[in-house]
Amino acid sequence: MAEIDIDKRFDIHEIAKNKKADLDRFQCTIYCCHSTGCKSSGSDDIISLLQDAVEEYDLKDKVRIVAAGCMGLCAQGPLMRVEIKGQKDVLYKRLEPLIARLIVAEHVVPALKLEEGETFELPEFLQQHVLSLDLPFFTKQEKVVLKLAGHMDPEDIQEYMAHGGYLALEKVLKTMTPAQVVDEIKRSGLRGRGGGGFSTGMKWELAAKVPTIDEKFIICNGDEGDPGAYMDRSILEANPHAVIEGMMIAAYAIGATEGWFYIRAEYPLAVERLEKAIKACKKNRLLGNNIMGTDFCFNIDIRLGAGAFVCGEETALIHSIEGKRGTPRPRPPYPTDKGLWGKPSCVNNVETLGNVASIILKGADWFASFGTETSKGTKVFALTGQVEHSGLIEVPMGTTINEIVNEIGGGVPNGKKLKAVQTGGPSGGVIPLEYMDLPVCYEELKKVGSIMGSGGMIVIDDTQDMVSLANFYLDFTVDESCGKCAPCRIGGKQMLLLLEKINKGKGTKEDIEELRKIAHAMQKASLCGLGQTAPNPVLSTLKFYENEYLAKVEKNEKK
Image (cartoon, rainbow, N blue to C red; front, top):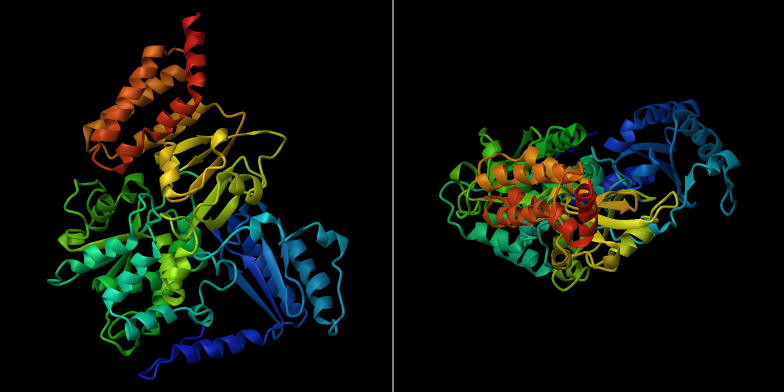
């Protein structure tokens, strides 16, 4: 990647213009998914063979190969999209290195020789690997955070600028006051995408109002730990600069001079791309002192988490950054008053910050036009489980579960039937079949005993035993409990013992009632969100599938 030569006359518009011209000279661009999922399926070998084939056919001046981020339909990976000027884009699925090489020989080469107006039909053996871009999986999404995912090189800062990157930062630094930025985010209705759904603008306002004695911090929470969730990881892999830009705008709004990314070490590719993005920003003077010729000074560092689920809670996360054991503390004081090293700190998650630049450029009203009255914008979900098209999706808030599962997701495969959908990970609950028309938003999910969480959505078919499912999630949260407070440490373990007893066919009806009592006590008395929400999978399965608990108990009582 060429380094941008920046001096006092730095012009981001000129850089973007030059990069666009450079990209436009290629007749064909091949985007190969190079996210964690597709890498594990062999996309490294595919990219290598593509490069060899392009060189062999002397196409380096005509064909550009891009190792891109997640393209969404993960179950069909490795994915590759071929874009040739004047022709319809073609998306290939389940690729192998040999097929990728043949795509260059049998698709790209002959297509580039076509005269204007001529058509080209793919050979039959290649058509078998084509995914229709008219699938509801693609057409029914509304992408804001994921708009550039799979459509750019995540390691090229110039390409991000060519797509409008860092224009939002320039706008706030040169035309807006911090208070105006906070007001714009408040008016947009953006809420935290990490779990609780607290107003992002209000959080920024609280942090901004704290007098600055020496320094404030902005922290990006990338400690995504829910089983089946990979939204934040994919966003960072596909477009790390968008999150960096959002963090910088947040820092300007609250008066912070230093930012911290807290990411779990199990996300090596996300960490690698983020490190490269930060390095590119520093080289090109988009981080450091007097950014874009203004008085704004800001730097970013990274801290790796060791995989503790509890460190997704903001005070535990802060302790971990400080080098302490990752345990939560009582609130208040909130981090906006007393956070990292006792200084005012604002914690936002990856997806939240990924929305910020678009809101600044397109306006609060544009963002608020998506979603519901109280849940604005879009939401990224990792749609997994027993569903035909599992992968990464982004839909407007208020989209129904039925639309997500049966239209975008293609329904339950293998002739099985839908039984429930689980949202919110170990902190969420199950939503039964009769609520499939429920709009997915913060308030509606809460009404049925679940939460939005960070965005995991697991589809459950009619073969799943719900008591065992509750057992799985509770076993996870008990194992991940920091043990600091008794309600979580003791209550969670006792609930797990009762669940295991029922699952083994040794439980009683009294055990079921005891489960409820302990669960409610944990919700009221636990120190942090982990303990307060750990009973949710148990309580929701008891609410909607108590018959399955009773069946196991009655079987024992008949012995």
